[in-house]
Structures are given as C-alpha cells and as structure tokens.
Length: 112
Image (cartoon, rainbow, N blue to C red; front, top):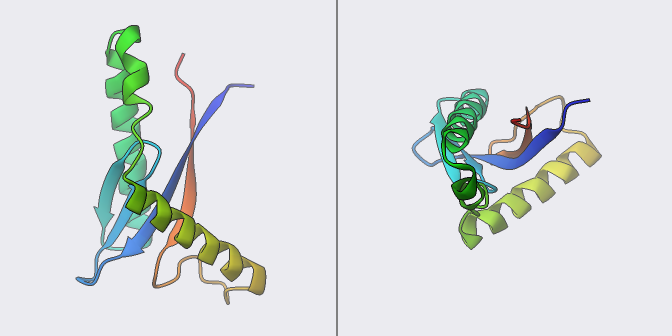
C-alpha cells in the first residue's frame, strides 16, 4: 500500500460572500464561490506546491514541507473542526457545509 500525506484544512465564508480554504500544515490559502470550489482550489494549490517542492534539491525540501500557518489560523482551524464534529454528532440535516465553514483533510499519495 502506498504511503499517504495528510493535510489539515478548513473553509470559511467571508463577509463578501466568497469562500476561502486554508491548509494549516503548508500555510496555503485558496478561494472559491462555493465551499466545494474552495476545496477544489485548495487541492490544486497543494498539488502544485508539492510538485514545486519535489523539484527542489533534497536538502532544501524539508523546510518547505514544515511551513506552519500563523497561530490565528491554527486556532481558527481547531474551532471550525470542533464545530464540524458537533454538527456531525447531532446531525446536520444532510448539509455538508455550514454557513460558517467546515474542516476537512486532504489525502495525497506521498511522492517517491
């Protein structure tokens, strides 16, 4: 079985109406008109970023793979993840996303 990399992410709706997705493990952000669009933009962003890191010399790669997001975003992720957990616990009437956002995990195969 191939090894996989996991990246913790979350979406939030901005007051202007668009959605932003953040990856707290790589300090990346993406935007979309819907939560799904923001998640897809984040997936593309992470894939592009990892491809760039793979193009670097091996001795430089580790510093690009340990870019933590600012503390404020990491705390916001924990808050969104907690709300997501409780929404699932009590049942969310079938809605995948709330109007405040949702936590999600990107799973990608590890590069050789």
